[in-house]
Length: 340
Image (cartoon, rainbow, N blue to C red; front, side, top):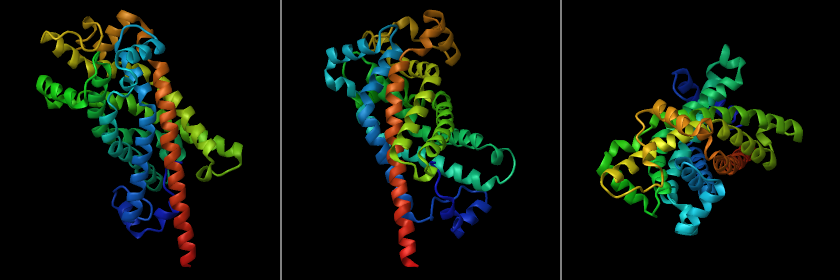
């Protein structure tokens, strides 16, 4: 699982005091070195995974804002216009923000899970591990959204513009035309997309890891790479498919300001999206407009690209993080035995 070993937390006097005072428990052995190691591992895992699958994210964004077209046609259009570099639009801001975002996300989940496991020894949370995973996933996403939202707003606007542009240019235009507050546009909608995603993912992830452990005859904490990667990929695919409609609405809402400002200034349509689709007044208005124009199928535009983006990214991220975490705790246990 993603949780830190309970025996490390239980051996810490500071952890016991923090738990008793209703604060989140400190990670592992409460050492600054270990905390930095886990934080760095989480950030490194996220950056590597994002960099590998970013092209599919670009295709996803393009498909979701356009009124028609397949995954293949969206990819060919990008390649025809910008070449291979077009598939990596927005990768700069993604790499810069990804490290603190994914680190905050993974560590928040571990903190919340350790806290709830140690705090609630009876009651509904104790008898329902799935509910614990759901709550921890939502908590982690809500906290880390302070990084995800500005990144998503800038990245997606870079990805959907018809002409290649830099993240800095998009940021400059956004602040000049709409104000800096637009960087956090759709904060709660982002949580509404990735919150349910995180809850579904972690619930499936813990279950598939347990099934994999049974199949391979291994404990969950020592599950081999095939089990970890397979569990992460399957769980991510299920969660991505279930939350595609919310992602379509979020993507259109977060990119519409770029288009509206450009059309009003007489600079044309920078995204290739029909202008009549763009001025959504609210989330519900966006949903009604999409369904009215394209039917329910319109809410699932880009589902294939979304699954092909998120599934391998999540498998790489969590697979790498789990392996590094196991290595760190294995070395820590060996060091303690040597000291004895």
